[in-house]
Length: 59
Image 1 (cartoon, rainbow, N blue to C red):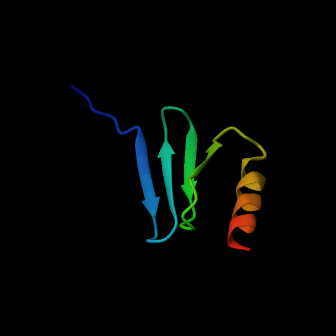
Image 2: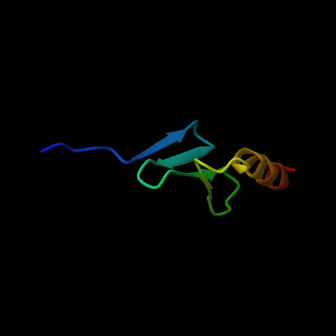
């Protein structure tokens, strides 16, 4: 039986991201108490969306 890891959590203590390899989505939590938000791997504008949300939440 082969077991594959389909999710991975990456954190530095304050910021974290959960990578879901099965659905090609990264859920990002920037540590401000808000709900995590998801970015699709294939979204060309995903990085711009992410940076816009971080800028909005952090100030």
